[in-house]
Length: 172
Image (cartoon, rainbow, N blue to C red; front, side):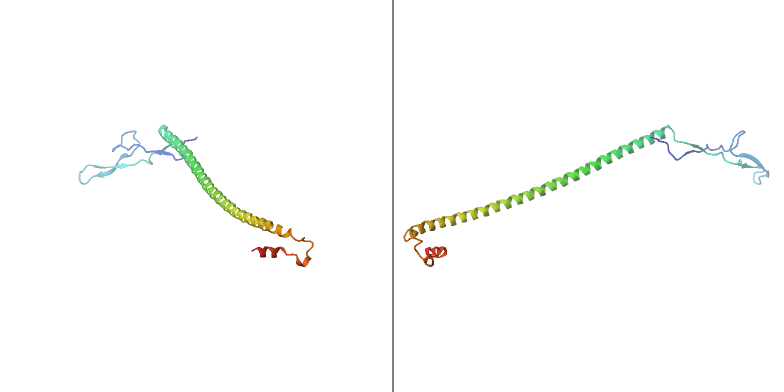
C-alpha cells in the first residue's frame, strides 16, 4: 500500500537578520545618498536582493508516513467492521423474516387443524343422524315383516299392493 501523499510539503526559509552581513542572502544595506534632515547622519536604506530564495518542496517525512500508514490501516479496519456490521444486519433481517414466516405458517396450520376438527364434528353428527335413521328403518322393516307374512304378496293384485311411502305414512 502506497502511503505517499500527493500534496507537497513546503518549508519556509528562516527569517533574515535585521541588518545584512557579508555573504548573507537577505537584504543589503545601501546608501541612498544625502543626509537625514533630523539627525544629520547619512541616509541608509535596505535594498532587497533580486528575488527571494525559492521554496524547497519536500515530501512527507518519516512521522508523516507513519501517520498516513496508521490512518490507512484504521480505514481498512473500519471498512472491515462496516462490512461485518452490514452482514450481521442482513442476517438479522433474514432471521426476522423467517421468524415472521414461521409464525404465519403456524397460524395457518392452526386454522387448518381447527377447520378439520370442525369438519370431523360435523361428520360425527351426520353419522349419528344416519345411524338413527338406519335404526328407525330397521324397526319399520321388522314391523312390516309380520304383516307381509299374512296373505301372500303375490296373491294381491298389483294395484292393491301398498307402496313403500304409504307404509311409512301409515306407521307414523
